[in-house]
Image (cartoon, rainbow, N blue to C red; front, top):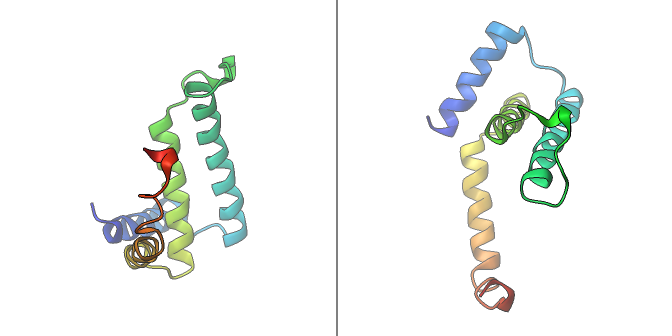
Length: 108
């Protein structure tokens, strides 16, 4: 599935199952919550925090998909074509960072 197809699929899902998009501010709060859930799993799986009973059954892939879903909702409702936005962003990063990372001794 392309990003463009994903945007259309999520838009269709929202209209058929969610009735309408939450407003942008609500979706921003939901996105923040979902990113927090990803951070919780990462800090416990790869970091130094230990798991709690309430962490059982949490799946990183599912939580990342939640982040991507809400991010796509925000893009849809604000009229952003994510394919175009990502392409422009990669171009910006390539121009800005072309030599920066090559000269970073910490990455070698």
